[in-house]
Image 1 (cartoon, rainbow, N blue to C red):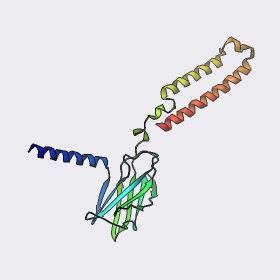
Image 2 (spheres, rainbow, N blue to C red):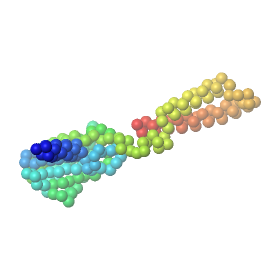
Image 3 (tube, one colour):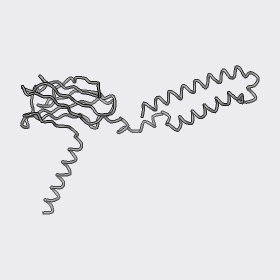
Amino acid sequence: MNKLFIAIIAVIVVTSSVSSVYAHKTVIVEPYEIEVGWRDEPPLVSQQNAVVFKITQNGSGVTNAFRDLTATIKSGSVSKQLDILSDVRAGHYYSKIIPTKVGTLVVELKGTINGVQVNEQVAIEDVEDINLLAFPPTSASGLPDLAQLKNAMSSLQKDVAQLKSGSMGPAQDADLGKSYDYAVFALGIGAAGVILAVVALIKRK
């Protein structure tokens, strides 16, 4: 009895684990079942992936299902018709895609399958930032973190204040005009570098 109970629990755990890994959505358009999802999960920004389809009738794969059926992927108001390719397995189809931003994508299916009208919208699993699985973290890639940028900005502000007050040092008093020009030029380059680093940091986030 105990062995039977343990076996049942094991089956439940394995089944729940499999269902959590494959976050595909299924819609029913009698007599067909249409399953839609990502080939690789979780889907990550800038990583090649594919939207996959499984179309069955009474458990058997439906061939030539996209003969009169179109699939369009949508992100907000932007949409693109997918180029559907057939898998070697009957009833399985896919379309390669590289997601470019995080968030939800919706697949719209319109047309007919063997004369059966199809008009469905399926929200597939959200696209995640690549940092979800990236290693080592992108903060170790050489880009400055926020604290470093704050320190750089603070240093620039102090240098500008010293220039305005004329307190850059006694050695610079002999040719203050030329030194001032050089200093302003150098500070400008430094500020540009900080701005570029901020832009890179924002894109990384």
